[in-house]
Amino acid sequence: IYRFARMADDLADEGDLSPHQRLNALSHCRKQLESIQSGRVEAMNGSGSHEAHSADPIFEPLARIVEQYQLPLDLFFDLLSAFEQDVTQQRWADDASISDYCRRSANPIGRLMLALVGINGIEHLNQSDAICTALQRINFLQDLGLDWKRGRLYLPLNELQAFGLREADIDLAVRGTHRPSPALLKLLAQEHHKAYALLRKGFPLCQKIPGRLGLEITATVAGGIQILNRIESLNFDTTRTRPVLGVRDWLIIG
Image (cartoon, rainbow, N blue to C red; front, side, top):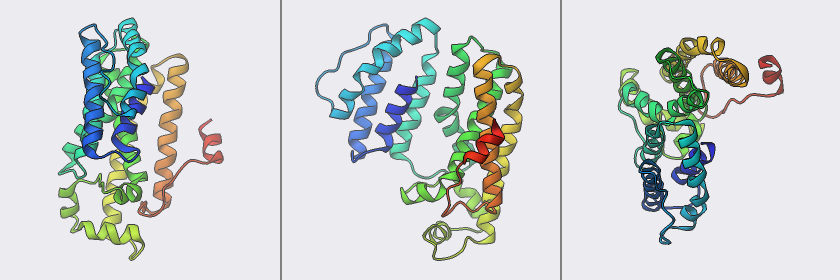
């Protein structure tokens, strides 16, 4: 599962491929998923790029895992649709569109992990979704400056407008030409609070999942909270600083 997600994400983001090449490579991944869905994993047709050929060994073992654990293939298609969207879309009109992106880019991973241990209760799934969406939104805050330099902005455009902000305000802050305006910091604080509220909503899942997976979920949530604390200590300004966890943070989490 990780190899599939990592490979598809890299096809959308890494290297020097053109958007057309990226979409072609992701289209091949979609065809392979469709082959798993129909019970027939296709071999490479020989017309793909080197990047596409390197993905070939992933799908046969993935097909076995999907069959063994009866994993919902629609979750893999959701992931793929988010990666395809990464190639073609760099702006988000409102919070609902960002939430939908998180539903497809992050939530499937949590649901697949639960499926591996046979957990499919609606309450568990909703709590997993809350955690995964929160972590994705935290990543948006962490990578605000980096994403901006890549041409992407994961802040709702209608909320920028509501705070009286323009994209130029973000550009000036990321470049260090001007300090972030109070309005921009308020918007980032609002996004921070949304992520924190989602983590709190999902936290009860940590106490319901036994064994190693439960411990990993708990550590992941604790890590997310520590990143949020770091962001708050920066007065929510991640335009030029990417907060990460250090040894001391992991000691606290442990």
